[in-house]
Length: 118
Image (tube, rainbow, N blue to C red):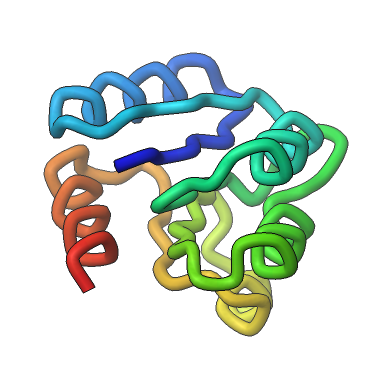
């Protein structure tokens, strides 16, 4: 299963990549929203994890673009901000789940598996 991680913080991106590779997923990573949008136009993913606060195109723009291109691909939004209106915007655009940073790698694994085994 192919997972796209869009995260601008190197340490977080590498930790997500390490954990999900350990779980057996094929991982593609991007450092900003622009790279993420290019990736979703170039390749089909089984799941996308995206931060909200990204350079160039923010996570909400990424979610909206992904739902135009790959309507059924599940999305987990990650963020330091737990602002209710931002969370609701993400869900209204098509996000399937939301995790506030910092989060447990084990919890992330469970959420990814849950979305991929629907």
